[in-house]
Image 1 (cartoon, protein in one colour):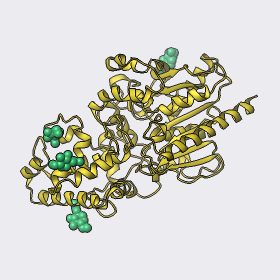
Image 2 (cartoon, rainbow, N blue to C red):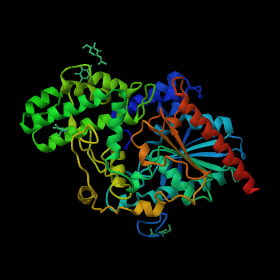
Image 3 (spheres, rainbow, N blue to C red):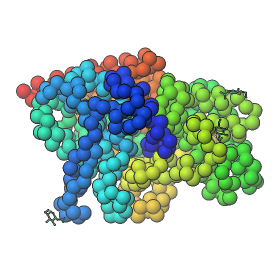
Image 4 (cartoon, rainbow, N blue to C red):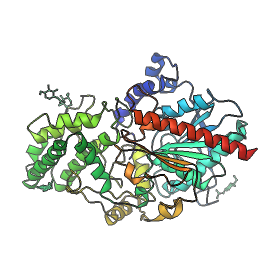
Length: 493
Ligand SMILES: *[C@@H]1O[C@H](CO)[C@@H](O)[C@H](O)[C@H]1NC(C)=O
Ligand SMILES: *[C@@H]1O[C@H](CO)[C@@H](O)[C@H](O)[C@H]1NC(C)=O
Ligand SMILES: *[C@@H]1O[C@H](CO)[C@@H](O)[C@H](O)[C@H]1NC(C)=O
Ligand SMILES: *[C@@H]1O[C@H](CO)[C@@H](O)[C@H](O)[C@H]1NC(C)=O
């Protein structure tokens, strides 16, 4: 689930973000195009002097680093309104801020102070600069350290802003949603409630079925048209035949590759590259075009199936279908397999650049994602990823041995009955959904399912093309959060 998959995605984000925010923020369009910073004049970019190591007073020094955050008091009823705090996940914090318009709408409605905090080791919050991914420096990249960062930051900023009486609600999408859950269960003294959107807290703790993820990706395409699944499977089958014949030149031509594959390893990379496009289209199957993580048309799964079924030549149809993701600009003359997709410890993709190193390291330590495709329960080639493969890869790449089960021990797994004030929202189109909490567990552990929703659609700002189900979900979220805030105030007084 690594973000910022594509370099060009970032450029497009600058334009795309505006459509999200323009509803609320009257930034000048000209500013938007020239500068990222001017895009959201109300969100000020700041740095917080953060403790480097919250849990060991001397191993890597007792220093600090500069943690980036974005803040807006535009809607805040000073000293009284709640604090809405986004627990940043695996990417540049602007990317999340610009794609979480719902938080702005909610802040406007409830008079809240908005803060978006960047996760350590991502974006500009690199504790050791360009050495952050060396050893032992990378060792301070843990879920626990990130949560402690947020707890310390909230505490200090509340002091600084005279917000003592302002209840804090945390928000997050995907891994950020997991962090929101963990904040509420680890720091209930600081956080009154959490909206965890598309937070796969079960699957990433090793609970559930390793086949589920790609099965659910497949079912999105199948639901659009059963023959779409058949066509994709058929295309991979044809590729498999060519690969077995070692007809590498034919593969290069058919798939418009910059270099011919030369080995089974290159074929494996090609399969991963192709599969990853389907993963992204399923996750980002929003009803309008977006620039989040990638550049997507409206209903990309539907577009993909139309493309897939538009040609009698299955393999070239497959090439054109993945082009929706990799060649959205129409500028690529050929696909460079190793630069467009990087295989890592997360079989759903780690993205590219520094952020991908950080996510890979997390996938090698606490976050378990041994998802595999098998060409039986899904439409993709057999690509196993076992705990043993993960262990070998992680030891080679980072010198670490993952500890399966730790996340479940540390953050409770599915045994959440003593927790409270958490909303688990999930969209049925999202392949991550079934790795999360789908059933309400108690009156204050609420599951909201959004039948027409993809990956945390509810966190996005309102859009004329929103399905009824997400509008209802946001209403329920809005009411529940208002209740939590009210209850927290009464407790405090
Ligand atoms: C901790 O901080 C103090 C004061 O800044 C410094 O003298 C000391 O060397 C530091 N210790 C470590 C282990 O970095
Ligand atoms: C997928 O399974 C089918 C049989 O159901 C088989 O014909 C095909 O070769 C397999 N495809 C791949 C890519 O292994
Ligand atoms: C389908 O193919 C036709 C003819 O080649 C083309 O004009 C059309 O744009 C294609 N549609 C899609 C969805 O790719
Ligand atoms: C990218 O899209 C353009 C425009 O449709 C097309 O000409 C080009 O062949 C595509 N590149 C690849 C690698 O398929």
